[in-house]
Amino acid sequence: RSKVKRIVVGLLGSLCLGHASLLPLKAAERLEVQLDGMLIPISIPELADWGKSKGQIPSELTSWLNLLDKESRSGFLKLLKAPLLKDRSMARQLLRSWAGRQLLDELSQLFRVDEEKSGGKVFNTLELLLERKPQVNILDFLEALPAKSLRVDLDALLKLAARWRDQLEIQQELVNA
Image (cartoon, rainbow, N blue to C red; front, side, top):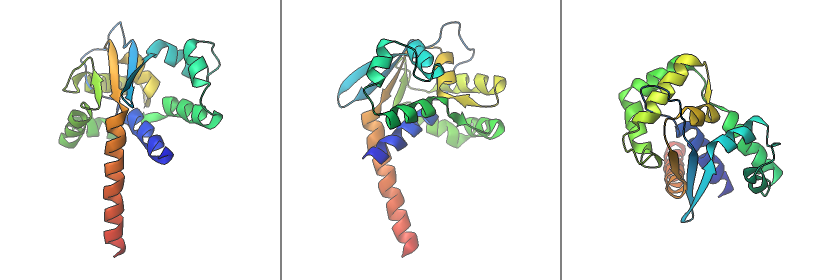
């Protein structure tokens, strides 16, 4: 199950990207994580400060994250700073493709930006960031997203990851047979 959670966290990072026509003066204020029926609000500016300071800045969030073991904190920090999309041109092609749009639409059910269901703000924010930077990480994205909040349904994401894993295992068994 911990392997699945790591995969989900990785997917979360890479899939939190999407739509909006201009980067706003005011970025998203909070990340709401839904897990085990609970809604956990996380201040995005506080999360960004924590990530930039490599977990050394004193804050309420730091206190909570310090409850994680060292390996989990380190993995979370790497996730926040890891490039979501390494190749700018490939990322832009993917975002503009039919498959990319379908993926964003499906993911908008798991990652809600101010209850928007289209993924438009995520797409536009990613487009603008990719114009300005060769690589974009989760912190860049969260700090640029024009929204009050981003809600991530980890319960549904864990179920989806488990379903994908099961499908991959079935495909691997068929290939081996």
